[in-house]
Image (cartoon, rainbow, N blue to C red; front, top):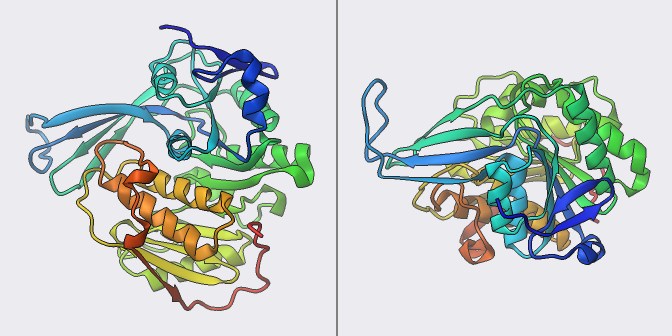
Length: 365
């Protein structure tokens, strides 16, 4: 592997392609930074099939592509492609193929030293866009790994506008890893802490939003899909994404529990934004779906980009849906750039939910 220039910030090396060491300060002072944390990153391999997947049969692929992956990394890639500043934090050993791929893409990264290679996730996509995912568990993650990750996040959070905590947790990581990181960042930075977005699933999501969770451990924004909304509400997931008004009520319940903003993606039915001030639904004109892998991450990237501009809630949601739809129309885990995005193709309207009181503060003001 050819080593690229490093920007050294604090005790860790920040891989920052095409930037000399003496430019590190410029990167840190160049404006709002979206900092992403991916505890369980991956290389994402997408295989396109000529027909629907048949279990137990040999099927020949039409194509196969591989991209850097992991939810937080995908968000950073989207932000970077839009010309905004982002730094991706994740565990990876020196020389890992993921680092090579991200360096080639020009994305600034701050890897936490790790002993084992990054996992590979495989997505099998049929001609109709139906996707079957096979995700490896990832390397073991012990207490020392969590301590190193948390320390690095705290170190870089002081210059961030948003901190994004995203993805599954590796084996061995405690289910409350994300609340621990949130608490550490806010304890260290106080009012200077960035806004915090959370996008995870299953037990880490349940643990992060446990009803007994202290306010200082809750994120400012979550980005569930329909299945995850149902998980948090304890209801069947069937039909949630097909019924935006019902999904909005589930999201409003989360706002009542202390989450200021819920950006809920609903697959082909667009997305919802629910805050203490109301609920908005947005849907994109139909697109030809090539791969849904990374579409939700792209939606979050679009939302955060609009947030950096001080956009209204409706405009933030419009950008999110435009980015998610653009990602779904691209192969593999291809992250859209602004030229791929068609905000004019997004339609929005308000939904009625039971009142949320008191309304959590809107930190976009």
